[in-house]
Amino acid sequence: MNPDQTVILVTGSTDGLGREVARRLAADGAHVIVHGRNRERGEALVAEIHATGRGSARFYAADLGSIAEVRAFARTIIQDYDHLNVLVNNAGIWLNRSPERQLSADGHELHFAVNYLAGYALTRLLLPLLTESAPARIVNVASTAQTPIDFDDPMLERGYTGGRAYAQSKLAQILFTVDLAGELEGQDVIVTALHPATLMETTMVREAGVPARSTVDEGADAVMQLVTAQGIESGSYYRGLEPARANAQAYDENARAALRRLSETLTGVPSR
Ligand SMILES: NC(=O)c1ccc[n+]([C@@H]2O[C@H](COP(=O)([O-])OP(=O)(O)OC[C@H]3O[C@@H](n4cnc5c(N)ncnc54)[C@H](OP(=O)(O)O)[C@@H]3O)[C@@H](O)[C@H]2O)c1
Image 1 (cartoon, rainbow, N blue to C red):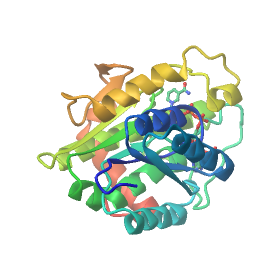
Image 2: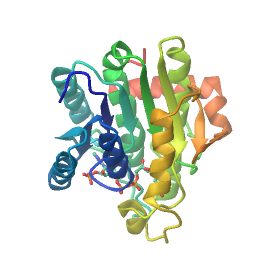
Image 3: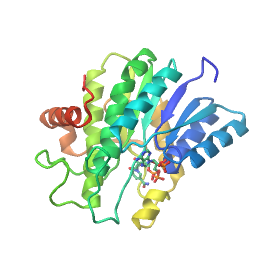
Image 4: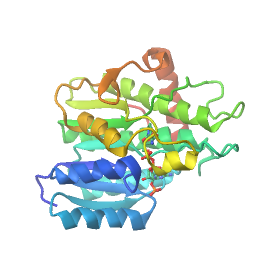
C-alpha cells in the first residue's frame, strides 16, 4: 500500500454488506483491511480488488467469538499499520432458526459476543491508532431490531430467542456509539451507528429463512454515507440514509454506564 492511502478496516467483509462496502471503498482508492473467518472468500475479495487496479486490500482471519482472537487481531493491525482512518464494525450473526442458546469461546451468549462485545473490544484496542490518525470515523452497523438489555440477565439464560438475542446485541452497539461519541468529543473522531436496510439479500437473511426485502446496494449506500459524507454528527443513529431515534435505552445514561461495566467485566478490556 501507499503510505498516504486511507486505511479502512471493515469487519465481516468476506460476505454480504461488508464485502460490498469493501469493494466500494477500494474503488475510491482506499486500502481495505478485509476481515472474516473464511480465508477463501477473503482472499478472493483481495484478488478481485487488486485486479481492478483501484485501491488495495489485505485479508486477516479472526473469529470474533473469541476475545483472545479479537486481542490478537488488534495487536496484528497495530503492528502492520501506522494509521487507521476508519473502523466499520459490520460483522454479525442472526441465528434466527436455532432455538438453542449458543455460547462463545468465552462462555458469553453468542450474538452478544460476536455482534457487540467483539466490536467493543476491537474498537477500544484500536482507539489509540484511530485517534492518532484523526480525522477518523467509527461506524457501527447495528439494526432497527432493538430490544433493551436486561442487565439482570444479559446472557439471556431465561427467555432466550434468537430474535431477542440479536436485537439486544444490536441495541448494545448503539449504546456504545452514544457513549463513545461523548468520550471522544473534540478529538475529530466521528462515531455513528446505523440500520443499513431492512432484510437485504445476504447469507444472514437467507439462513434466517425470511424473504429479502432490500438489496445489498441500498445498505452499502447507507454505510458509505456514514464513512464519507460531511455533516454527520458524532453519536447519531441512522436508519438507512436518514438520521433517526434509536430505542430509548440508548439515551439512558445509567444504562450506558451499566453496559460499560458489563463490557469491561466480560472482555477484560477497560472502557476508558
Ligand atoms: N442483512 C440485513 O438485512 C441486515 C439488516 C440490518 C442489519 N444488518 C447487519 O449488517 C451486518 C452485515 O450483515 P450481512 O447481512 O451482510 O451478513 P452476512 O452476509 O451473513 O455476512 C456476515 C459477515 O460477518 C462475518 N462473521 C460472522 N460471524 C463472525 C465471527 N464469529 N467472526 C468473524 N467474522 C464473522 C462473516 O464472515 P465469515 O463468513 O468469513 O465468517 C461475514 O463476512 C450485520 O452486523 C447485521 O446485523 C443486516
